Image 1 (cartoon, rainbow, N blue to C red):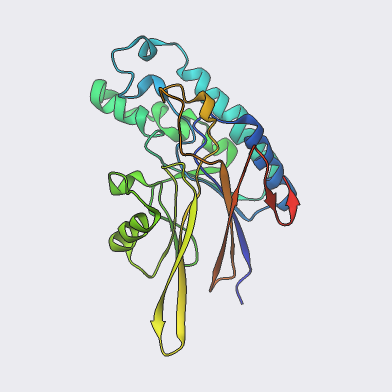
Image 2 (cartoon, rainbow, N blue to C red; image 1 turned 90 degrees about the vertical axis):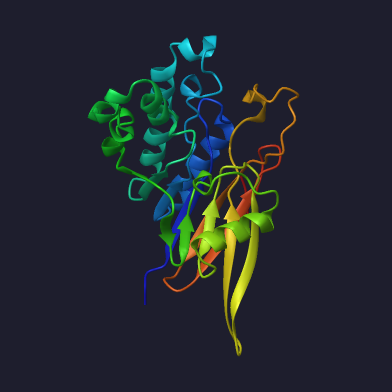
Length: 256
């Protein structure tokens, strides 16, 4: 029988526009429950200075890029690795994380070949024993993680996302994705003659601070802070989506 594995899933953080209170809570959860695996689902860092939205503006020239990278190492990777020293830790590439490479490709193409500018080196991932991976990426039995931008465009409803992912990657898989900051968990099943296999599609939301999202002009967002946890016995996977209200929630019967 396979050893049961736990997977803690941390959604979009988008440093430096994250909620540090929630991030601290998630690090404490990792320390207390010691997951076998930790997946950060992409958009760990926002990288606003190399965004296409700031191209040509004063923000493009703000000298903060190294500051944001250092903050990501100091406030995310370092304390999380200290909290869960034995966990296999992965960082799934998101569209915001890819901004730097996209910027270099468009405006400084010869620099693409520099090892110093790889995500692994910029963020010292070897030091923290973190793997930088691309979606779709298998994280549990019959379960794929994708950030969500790989499919192109947005879908309007949870069921539309479910249909989009199953048509692209197959209805026999579970899907964990991020990108929209709108958490949900929906299920489906396939089979006949009493042999039914349940599957799920899970959006893990974000821990971004809506107040920090100053680019949303009227301050109106449809996001909810959340995280997720999977239990995998080698044959089945049980998902748990933990939503937070006013930075408060319940996990494993305890208030966090």
